Amino acid sequence: MATTILHVDSSPLGEASASRRLTADIVAALRAAAPGARVLRRDLVAAPLGHLSGTTLQGWGAADIAALAPEARAEAELSEALLAEFLAADTLVIGAPMYNFSIPSQLKAWIDRVVRAGRTFRYGDKGPVGLATGKRAIVASSRGGAYSGDAGRQALDHQEAYLRTVLGFVGIADVAVVRAEGLAMGEAARAAALAAAARDIAGLAPAAA
Ligand SMILES: Cc1cc2nc3c(=O)[nH]c(=O)nc-3n(C[C@H](O)[C@H](O)[C@H](O)COP(=O)(O)O)c2cc1C
Image (cartoon, rainbow, N blue to C red; front, side):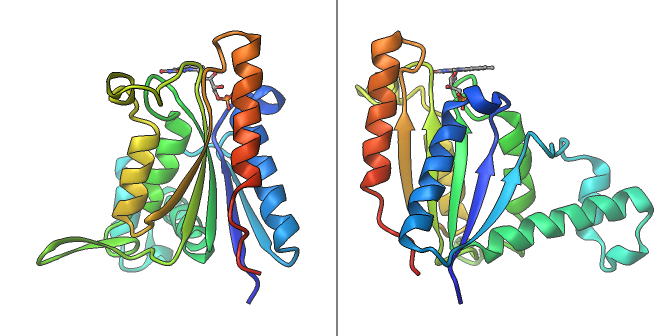
């Protein structure tokens, strides 16, 4: 079967977004190497997800979604659709700006719906077990400042570090980061950051055909 790529974006900046530019370039590079690839799209700004609510959690616990009240049913069906595309993907391409040392709440709302007990992880007698194995993730990381230098600066990164943690938690150990950082540190720094990210993209391993 053709490989499936899930293309996720979370920046609200549209054409001006660095992470959107990177995810588009990553997906284009993957497609060039695997022309038969199926690409699923999840734009978390064009179709925003709300915070988890009591209704959302009620829907997750339901034995029969069809029997739920309309609002809970819609929430449960949305969660199921998000899980289905997450599980169908062989490669995740995730646009992730750094917002206040972490990730935008748009992206967090998605993570909160795809990291699900019994669906993408479970607890065994030795601790958590990831169930979404066999996938590869490519994170397009954009940052105004720079954090990949010394340990002191790296300690401020709760964006890439968090994404590696949560992806690993569901069983995805193959995580590559395409990083554009220092984007707000002047024109030269921005150009250098985007050039470095372009080199990273050129060096990505191709998707399976
Ligand atoms: C609300 C907000 C919070 C931000 N917080 C940080 C931050 O903590 N550290 C940082 O280096 N850049 C921060 N930035 C800058 C963004 O990471 C940078 O503009 C990046 O390019 C955003 O990704 P995008 O271009 O794909 O939207 C922040 C930007 C916004 C709008």
